[in-house]
Image (cartoon, rainbow, N blue to C red; front, side, top):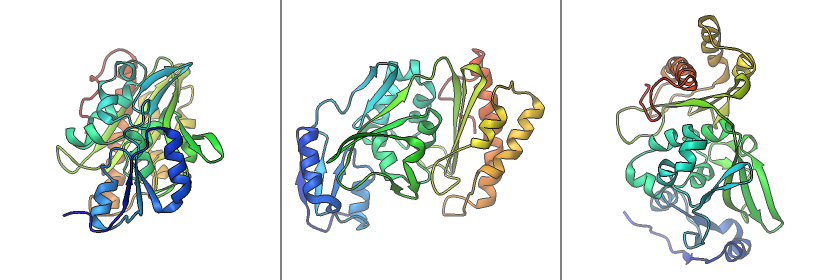
Length: 295
């Protein structure tokens, strides 16, 4: 199939030029980065923009770099870029693990992390990871630049706080210190598939725990009650059981084409247990290598 409606294609060379185009066309414009979501939606007729602003020619937006006490990923950084980055593997190993489970090699080569969070589907893989790492979304618009904490970013299925004339230029992740964790993703089959459910667990310095979920609520969510329960504590069998039981109170799964509500609710308990065990063992220098399939 092809795109059946006419539109104007623009390819700015700078962020400033991109912002001028978005300011001029407002809600009638869509930003094209990797295109793995947008092009499919345009082919299906679900998106019919008057103007497509292709930002792939803007220099610097593909960088993954150190900036003071943080790692910054430009809005054109792809999942393959993340997976192959020595900086990410060293500083944010669970993010690299997540990137390896996204779709297919072809999609990872094109799809961007920023595009993933701008699409804001409940099953997006990037959302829970960024929630666990306490990321900030770097946005520019007609009124200047702003940083949006990731826990304020998602407002519902396919909706965010991004305004029509704004552009996401990157993601900033504060240094987490020496930590370990797990990203566990359940799919219907081995290979290319969206998440039926996902769990992210990070074990931070000082026995701080971070937990986030995907595909079990209208948007990616933090496990705040679980984090409070675990704070400052070492994991033992009794605490593990309490966390697994509490998981059911954190999520709100639905039945859809990929899974039933009941199956998600059952499997998220299994995934939570394995993610906790994996995080503890990795923090101790043992456990499965990052990228291992745990479900």
